[in-house]
Length: 388
Image (cartoon, rainbow, N blue to C red; front, side, top):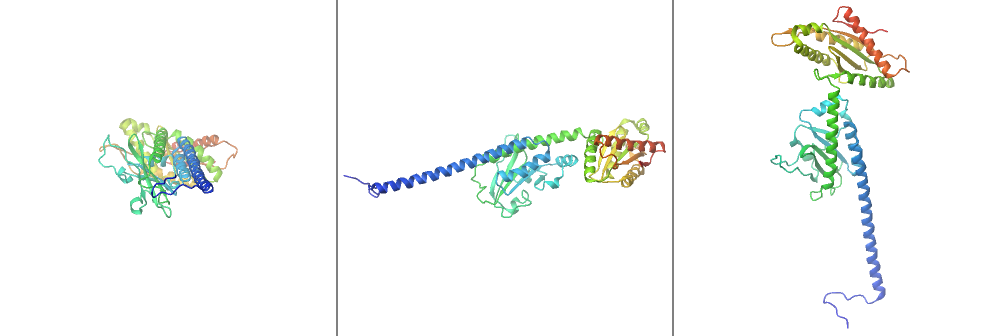
């Protein structure tokens, strides 16, 4: 005798019907397994892409290489429509150094700088050394709320994640992720993965910025703040190669402060240092951003002018000479000194196309130096151009 539970369906006694049920259940299980396998393969693929991404950014040797890799690769491997970076740069130190090292920020429109932590938009509360680090902010995109993090939002942007970039609990910026999928970033979503990704990016950013700062210090004259000889020697080689390829002129000025020993003897070495700083400032004021000024040693400076022929360079040199001679330099409230400079100017000509950049560089400096000598011999406070 068969008993059934009230309200339940009796089991199928027909073998054919039971076979159909088993087949349907089997098919459902196979479909579920296929879906899980597909998800596992997709997750494995994503994991492999992100591991390759981590290795690539860890190996980045410069600031442009690092941020370029982030903006080029991360949107693809994460299937995102927008990725931006906000960095805290309170005194514009990062921007100043990167500009001096030749970084073109126009190439990275999604690289953003803020003055303070508050501008990043995180809920920081009352922070102290023991405060927990802020968590990522996930939710629907709001133009007014998220406009600073996404100044160029893609059409249809729906959900965003603002992920703090942390180094030893210190916030250095935020990684901002945007998607057209409204379910991509929701407050209930787990954030372990994006926090891990942001931590790798934060480490790489801090390391690269520190290395670039050290590089800048190694290429800068500590007294005047302009470049040093090491920088100008390297930059000149690069510009000679570029000028040859793109067929534009470059010129060099060799500048020497007249009677500088007399200045040191009169106002002392501290006064001489002040003269060097002020002369460097006056020279720089006459140059373009694309030009480069370096202290070559002692009281000598070298200027590299990009896309400037001999006549243009001589005109700029004359402006520099007049600027230095035009007004006295204050050493203290009681002491002022009158300073002049002599300048030699030379321009890169076609010359021997087979000559190495090193040979051409030495010749160009030698020509400008020879003209400087002539300016000194001719009475100082004058400009002499090389007419080879």
